[in-house]
Amino acid sequence: MGAVQAQDFQGALWAIACRLPGTTREDVESAITRARIVRSWPMRGTLHFVVAEDLGWMLDLLAPRVRASTKGRRRQLELDDEVLASTRRLVEKSLEKNGPQTRTSLFAMLEAHHISTREQRGAHILQHHALEGLICLAAHHGKQPTFALSECWIPKRKHLSLQESLAELTLRYFRSHGPATAEDFAWWSGLRITQVREGLSLCRNELDVLRLGETEYWTGGFEVSATTRMPSVRLLPGFDEYLLGYRDRSAILEPKYASHMGPGNNGIFLPVFL
Image 1 (cartoon, rainbow, N blue to C red):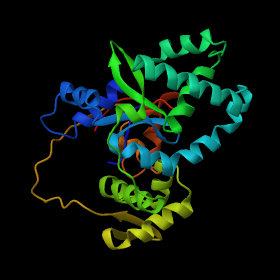
Image 2 (tube, rainbow, N blue to C red; image 1 turned 60 degrees about the horizontal axis):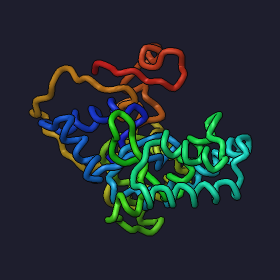
Image 3 (cartoon, helix red, strand yellow; image 1 turned 30 degrees about the horizontal axis):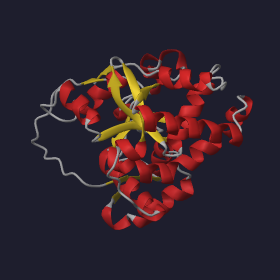
Image 4 (cartoon, rainbow, N blue to C red; image 1 turned 180 degrees about the vertical axis):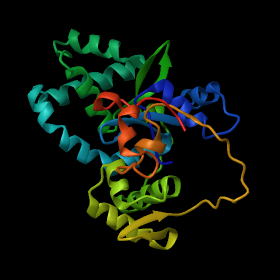
């Protein structure tokens, strides 16, 4: 999949489990606890689950655009380079000393050092350091997620060049989401369309392209037998990749019904029957 949307933690557990027949909630939670998968903000400033060893190269490829897009908001919150450098030192020192900590605990630590976390300042501080690769979300403490130093929580990391990263993410997206368009991939990943075109060029021999009218759809990977028995109903969580993995969702959802999936058009996507 490359990445699975994880704004809603409970729903994200099911999004993973429902794609792995026989998998239990405990299996997915165990994968988190053992740092096989990890939750962070690798793309679009939105929480996703990714394979833990992939987080580093994904951030190298995708995080610069996210950081650039939030620069204005950081300025509004008076989070300049000096403040962020200070919070980085404090967060790093606290996690080195105490191990994984909840957001509430880290906010309290920052407040104790006279750094306000109000008006979303705290959330932007932690997200910024996650985008830098300093921290990631770790195992839960009760009902609350904890933050850990990435280098401690994920000791094994895959190292790729930016070109290798672009090719790898391109393959993963179209093998799991295809048929899909270049614009779909650009929306999902947050990459510029020029980067998407480069990725497709790098993977041209490993993907198939289908043309419907003037639109190109890219796909590749799995062969599905026509005799494969499929359930007639699936239950999908909110924010599921089947719907949110594309810019254009009209192939699976008539636009007139879109308001049923996301009432209020406020960015909240409900669980659905498929």
